[in-house]
Image (cartoon, rainbow, N blue to C red; front, side):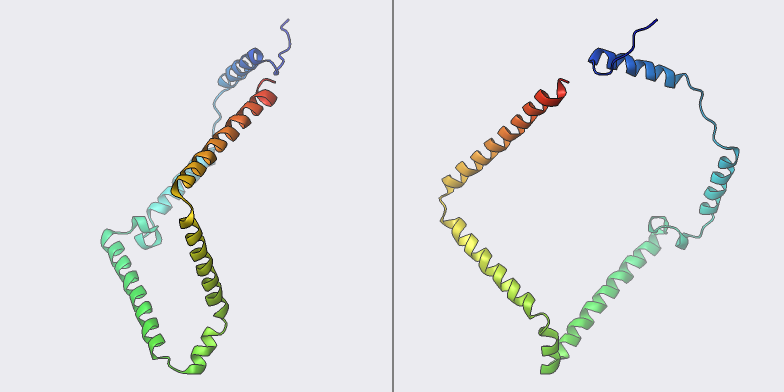
Length: 161
């Protein structure tokens, strides 16, 4: 009679893995349902018979791909040019005011961010560069220490059990 395998001991884990691997390798291969092969082959034939325009872009002929890309770029250029021309023709104060009033908060927010970035840039430039190097080295050292401490704590608490 064999002794029961306790999975808490590392030497037993290897024995359990070998036992399970042996049992699984001895299993006969499973057969797919008989109708599966016919269904798969029919679907492959159906997809192969599709015209190119019903397939994905990668299956299109090269000339058609190029024409599509060029047509799309022309459409984007037309839309942008039309928008610029129409925006240039709008000189009416009520129209401009109607458009800009709801977007006033965006301008104020952008101005606030611009002022904050300018203040941070001025403050950053006032710090001597060797202080920045020391701070960066200290931050990297503390990060490495935190990783090492975490790994040590993990090994102490979990890996040895």
